[in-house]
Length: 260
Image 1 (tube, rainbow, N blue to C red):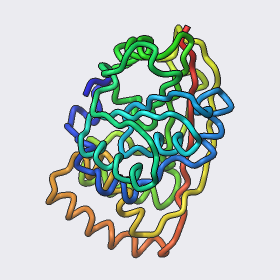
Image 2 (image 1 turned 90 degrees about the horizontal axis):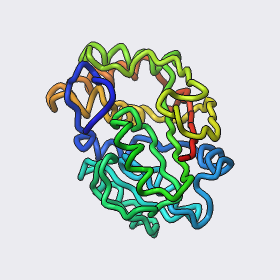
Image 3 (image 1 turned 120 degrees about the vertical axis):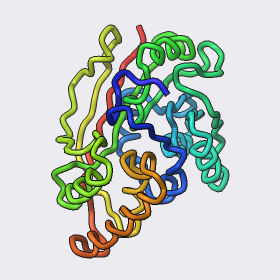
């Protein structure tokens, strides 16, 4: 995997190690994100959309339910295997492939738009943008988005402190949720629009526990024995600080640009 900056001081991580927890406990963006993207022309009925870094396919499934011709790619085979299962169970016609965002197997002008949710930071953007200029139609749309807890939520803050004790190199803690109007990587592209808003996401203790295991700082990077120790400590912490059912505030954001 290529990326513009060293992440977590170069500590290796593999999302495929978290695939079961990722698919079971990690919620996808709310329906309102798809509504917002559609207002900017991404995710329309019959549109051909390529979802980069699709993970377990939550974005691709959301688009497919709206009548979009969705394709999802990811470099992690375990993630693609998990993506195919619910798509088949729900009768959704989605093409999933194991491939990096920088070098896809698709023909020129094969898609009308491309999306990247929670993954744009992991890509080497010059190569991805060059590849998208090849596989998207002229003036094709690119939408990047995030769906992330806010560090000022008390349950999230307590969790981050524990993750950092086990993994001090984890760099996703303490996010203030600030989103630039136009990101630096979009320079030279036609800016279409952006959105940023907050939602309270419901969890049970068990689901939030699994969601945390599926984060980069835990299940994707810690050795299995440390993940198990972390999990036991987090169960005890949750029993002290959280009721059985609670919400965690998340920020939803997206940027949409158009190829010139």
